[in-house]
Structures are given as C-alpha cells and as structure tokens.
Image (cartoon, rainbow, N blue to C red; front, side, top):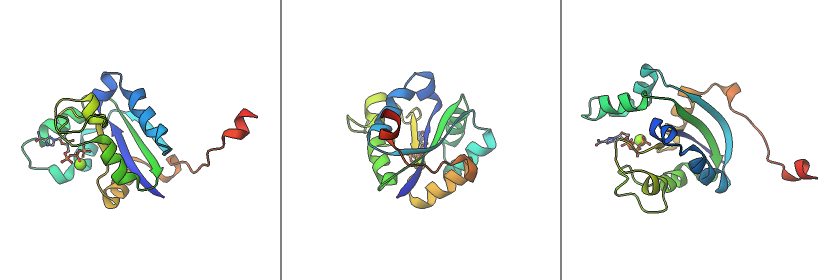
Length: 148
Ligand code: RTP
Ligand code: MG
C-alpha cells in the first residue's frame, strides 16, 4: 500500500468544494490516515514548493497558498500517488480532462484547487513536512461492527 499527501488549496475551501472533492477520494476506496485544517506558515509553504524557488510564478504561488486555510491530508491506497494525479488532472485546468477534479472545478493554473504528491520521494518528504507520526492513524475500516 502506498501513501500520498493531498492538500485542498485555499480556493477549494473558499469556494465550498471540500465535500465534493473528499467524496471523490473516499468513494474511490482510499483510506484517510490524517487530516489538518490550517493556514500554512509562509516558511513551510516555501519548503513545500522548494523545487519551484526562483521560477517566475513562485512568489504568486506562495501568496496563494498562504492566503487562507487549507485542508491537508494523508491518504492510503494501491498505486495512490499516480492514481490521485490522474484523478486531479493536469496542472493547467484548461488542459485537464473533464471528469478530473481540476477539469471539473477549476479554470486557472494559479488557482487549481488541489495538490497531490508527484512521486514516492515527494510523498515521503511532504508527509514528514506537515505531519508527526502520532498524527497519522493506523486503522482498519469495519462496517459490520457499526451496523449490526
Ligand atoms: P501541485 O504541486 O500544486 O500539486 O501542482 P503540479 O504538481 O500539478 O504542478 P507543479 O509544476 O508542481 O506546480 C506547482 C503549482 O504552481 C502553480 N504554477 N503556476 N503560472 C504558472 O506557470 C504556474 N506553474 C505552476 C500551480 O498552482 C501549480 O499547481
Ligand atoms: Mg507539483
């Protein structure tokens, strides 16, 4: 099983898209291991997007990502890193296919509502940047126990 770091960006929160996006991820069958709702400190946002430091869009990206609270999560599932990238769609929402999260809900690259790790290395680094071990739950879904 693989883990990935997913973040609903400030515009997803402000536009009331949280529940729609979470429904897609949960309905796919992925398991939520951790969740936090907070405004990211600037220094942490810069570390998260360190690979883009120096690029023309970097400052705007950091302003955007620190402009309001985000929902950050760890999810687990089979091949989840690549599959979540497919479910998210391309970085530029205008090129993202209909049926993808960005394709259905966003218009601009600079306001593309969701982040997902792009490799196992990124996932490990990003999870460690935002979560302590004790904040990540180990659990087995058990429906019958609650319904019977
Ligand atoms: P993310 O890291 O947020 O999941 O997005 P991504 O992998 O699809 O795209 P990436 O290349 O890592 O870019 C990170 C975020 O920077 C903003 N961006 N703006 N104006 C531009 O040309 C530009 N390019 C990238 C986007 O918000 C993108 O998600
Ligand atoms: Mg990226």
